[in-house]
Length: 534
Ligand code: FAD
Ligand code: SIN
Image (cartoon, rainbow, N blue to C red; front, side, top):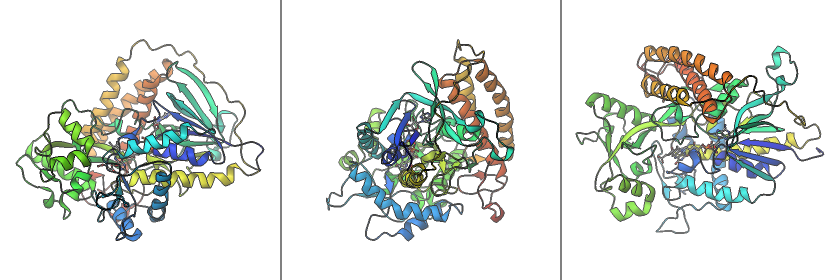
């Protein structure tokens, strides 16, 4: 056995990072970082719920089939099996940790189950329509009271520290093992190295790379960009999922209208009032998500409209308020008298199906570095994620990562990070006097990603995006080395890297499949039925 407890650094406090902290703390000291407050991240905003085989008339085979169908031929089958089969146990664990899922009003000993696009069974456990918040609150309470977990809020990982920084390695070893990360104290702008025997990236998604997104501000793809700079393999970045129904209102920032409403019979209508989805898919408004978003995009372009409608007028007002309190109060806030009135909705960037390529135990291509949750590409989602499968993936893979690491980290030959690591070098960097360049460049990236690399793509637009991003890269690099880094500059640099990875991956895929629709290759090609790995 090792002589002292291993030290694990977890970067991110969504469902993946929090549940990992609880698992890893069974055999290790854990430091858990959050860029802002512990509860801020995509998890907090999850509405619909978490998919798992729960009902008696459901089966692993059916959940697997729906996941594979949504994934459009690119899911890794062994990963799908793992998530589907381990899902129910992980949910029981969440319940033991204090997560309260909504119960079935007719049979209170059972849980109420939602259905969403692409599912052929009711299998989504939820806490009304604020599932993510309920999960965060329960897990945070456990994590905060755990003696072996140190929580650091408002601390941001800038870059991974690689063995190659300490000594010269052979070309074949790349940058070597991951030894920890440089951490920025956002309040003071001080930077310090943090050593770890194992570093866990749980830093979430990258929706902020697009102008319109359901994601909160922290979702800037930091983990993917850090891993890429460290030489890790990154996969399937062309598969950004656009959620079909975000609230369309000039003052509503990032508000999602849950797909569970379509599960309850909600229908999408164009501005002429026509139920258009059956023209595109036999499942109508409950078709897999990419089909719905792409169909809305076609309808918007065809009619010149700015949004479509979600019609939930068949739901009784008191039932709507009781079952979907969050959507109800948000509609009210913006003067929409739902369910009596239609809700105006548009698609927005929602979920990154690609990410840091990992194996079945969350191991990246770099020793000492694992990745879990939305930042990872596990193979569960393939070319399109089935609704409510991501919270599931987060809890399944945090457990798997911990189980795997336990053997290595507690063995007598366990690799330990060095006691001291080199300090961050500021060089001749000076304080940045104004933020205007950052704000303007950030907006430029997000706008061009929306216009050129959105739901429907073409070679011409992708190439233009590549050229413009290369120009911006030059400017951002100049600023990065000239000025002392702060949160905004670090995020901008990461966003740019993620944008470039998305464009590069989209250009490499010479077909249309799942979320990636390129008018120059309108069909799927059997020759392209593989991951895009950078
Ligand atoms: P997150 O929950 O996003 O957490 C990321 C963490 O990383 C945060 O703590 C952040 O502060 C931290 N972080 C990021 N960068 C750094 C850095 N550089 N240094 C330090 N910390 C950092 N999925 C479902 O399955 N069901 C749903 O119903 C559902 N609804 C959704 C609704 C909305 C509005 C959104 C946006 C997503 C939804 N999803 C849903 C997707 C799902 O919520 C996310 O994929 C999942 O929560 C991601 O969890 P995570 O732990 O990987 O990351
Ligand atoms: C929703 O509630 O519509 C979001 C579900 C998901 O993204 O999985």
